[in-house]
Image (cartoon, rainbow, N blue to C red; front, side, top):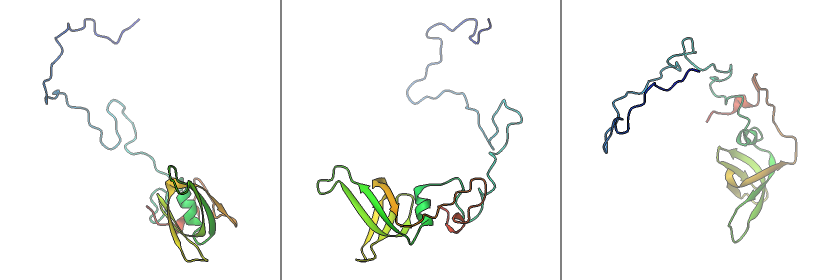
Length: 152
């Protein structure tokens, strides 16, 4: 059976010693353009999906809540949120029209009072819609709904 270990190991104390602030003299291998040493023919760059670099469009695979909320801008929703360790209220229900949605927030406006709510996404449990949701994921193709959404 072949072994990957050297035939004779150095004795204790024969390993290089480094004092405080000293670094070994070895230079780590560098990787450029996605090519790894020792693997000839490895692709230079990662292959990209057809819609990966379309200006003004999010990548088609990103079916996140924020994007679904953006597709439904202007619709009336009910947002259920939980705020842990809050002495006044632990859970709260917000009803309003979606004005905007970002990676970490949702902005609603109450049509009856004109009050606007900025809700951090970390508190959102779920959202209900009183009408049909705009959501047309077409993985591998172009989704017409995402074409109008600016990239992050």
